[in-house]
Length: 355
Image (cartoon, rainbow, N blue to C red; front, top):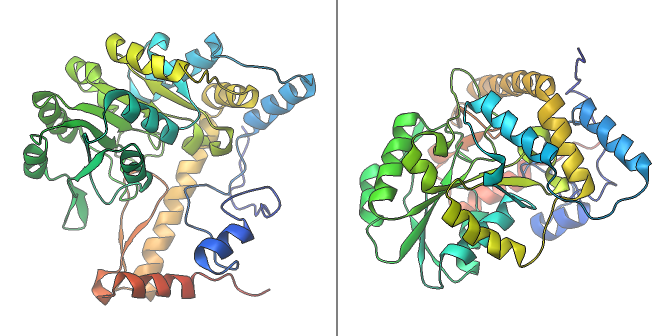
């Protein structure tokens, strides 16, 4: 078995990486020497089978139009069954070049300008942009921090779900950035509220494979048949296997009526997986599991290091221990800083040391 070296430092400065672009850092953070930790993009080399299959495909020398091959879809179907115990059909899957494009298409398909979409802050910030850029309104049901753990406010959700013109709920599962892996009971409560109020659940499950034991990811559509038929589950190999630059995602829509409606919108712009995106997904899902298992151990050790460092060196900063994702959500509230003061502190401290 290959032993992967996640300690290897790889220079990404000249690879058109938005994360490491000095020009981008200068324009957005006013300092090109700041350590770029602002985007969920790992600096680990991908699993060797992915590199090998992409290299073999590149040697073919022709990169014409691609399509959703049976092997491409079967790889995703088998992965869901093996990792999450959810039996999906390949016919349920639609392709989009990333989950944010998918969310845009979903809002355009199922909402009209002026309609409302529920989110639960603090949450992945593009959710808000997707909603407002399509002329819709955000309805926020903030998570509640309870004894160092974030929870859903179900009484608040019950109230806002009854607002007129509320059509969708964006569920982040596992939740980015607080790292919650929602339990079956939590998903059931959310699903029942949305069913009762005729709200379609759009579940962003891009971090579904990055889970720390004893937690277990439960796909929203697996909780019940009723939820399966009232959901669109957005998945991708990109976060799991560090493939974000290949623009690939699998949008699972079990409800045929919903699927046909969304597919009409997607078909209008004729999108399909690119050559290397298709190859990478097949390699990742069919041959990348050992890499993932080693990655989870490495990430767990990183979290242990952060936790120990904070307790010893900056005890007033608390880490909200993630149950999933590779993000560490830090609580600076003990310092009573304004947003501007905290931003300035982060910019001052997040500097690379001079060599």
